[in-house]
Length: 404
Image (cartoon, rainbow, N blue to C red):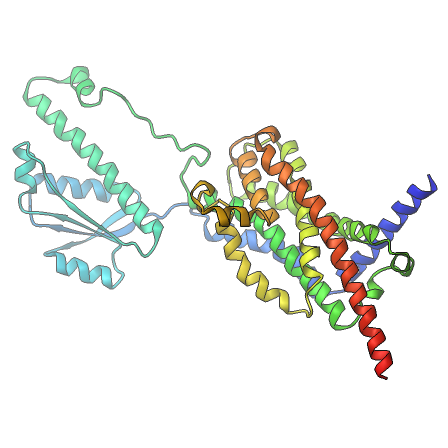
């Protein structure tokens, strides 16, 4: 019983000392609290509109027919594009696209109207701005929707001319009714697709950068040994030190995670159909794995600014290999297994499935277990890294004293 009390007391002593170090460093406080909340807010407000609307479009109508004008009017009526220019030739429209004044061109050849009227195959050309995937997606989706509607309109006219109207004609035109339902992202928006992944990644990356600043400062000012209670340092009880420090970071980041993953998802009306209890149970191993992972890496940071380089280099890579942007099934095996090193990969996958898709913990069992495995592995690596760091500092001090 006394041993248990001693363990708990040592852990909370270390946690208190670590919290004191954190709150006495303005840069770390800024990263842990302000940046962790500010980054998701910026992402949410930047992508608040979800979809790209009213993109300017140029129409080149060499056909000058009723059919081509009807198609162009329907395009103009879609929410994604607006017909802003009616050009005399393709070259004029191309110049507008090169000047970034339009994001798409629709070209109707001279025989378009004739072919439609004569029930022949009619051809129209669509040119999309590929400088942004969202431009291409919006222009193509609007043109595709108009094309389907125009085909149904042409068929209905043909059946009407043949004397078929009403329900019989509609069944001939569309024998199977198709409803477009976007699962888990109802509005098909970019924010609902990307921001949930960024909410998880921000937690890990701000934690990493803040620890780099804190640990780098300790090494620069030679305060590594002073950051650990003398009794624990002398008796080699570094597991308690590691666990105590982790408790300090968990006390800070658990509330921050709740704000990011619960409050902000509702603030920006992101998908949030998951069970809150399941999300909380999933957050705990993710935060612990991220904490021990960051402690392991940051133990070898030599100065306050070194972590910034690593942070900038890895942030973009981590979002790509997480599987949120590019499916993991299409990744080369090397990059897939490489992504398993980082807690953010399993955290992003599990959180999206629980929060946006309504999965249970049993349905994200692989990600959940991997986070607990990472927690155990990185706990020992963080303790080992601390042991190496202390031995290095003691050896360095002995060499310095002998030199003097």
